[in-house]
Image 1: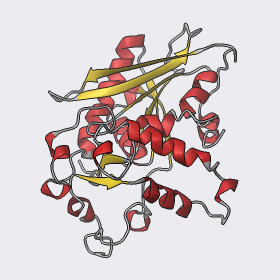
Image 2: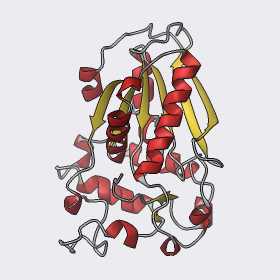
Image 3: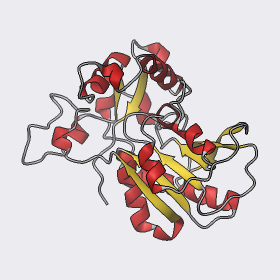
Length: 268
């Protein structure tokens, strides 16, 4: 199973029977801010009967894709969520505002250049808080383990610094840092402005459009081997793109695979 060993080291495993079926539930909850609905997915074994501070995890996605392609890709054994369920965990994931199946604000229907980034870090901290409190109330627990990926690691860490009493463990997977070296941004994004290196966030507008070709190229560029199949099965590229398409109902109106928001740099 790829990309799982770090979490396996940090979190204690509690294996269930391999014959147990996985139960999935998709729904929306109210965010802290009026008018915002957050998509939530839960996955657990149908044999799960205990809910404790130690066996509930919440995945927090990054800046480019929403939760379901990242954490629950139904291609062979690539679902990190299913892997965790099979180890005995109760798994949650959610889409931050303007991502995936959560509420998309009006700026998402306007040209990107007409607005600044719409999902600022301080806003999605509130989204994380809404989901954490929902899980705590639903299962009558005090704490939840956060697993953040990329920008999700930054926002998870930010949330944990403010509400450590609600966080059991914090897993930071590939946290975003050293922005001038980040492969996701490319030329023309303002990276050459060394005096004000973070102004590119505003210049890129409310969101950015992605394509399968662009994501494949980025992915290939981050694999340090000529033969990419030594790190990744080729079929997963199409599976990932298809799953990403499902999260954007407007994707069929353009020659690309999804619309996503571009966040601003983390600021209080």
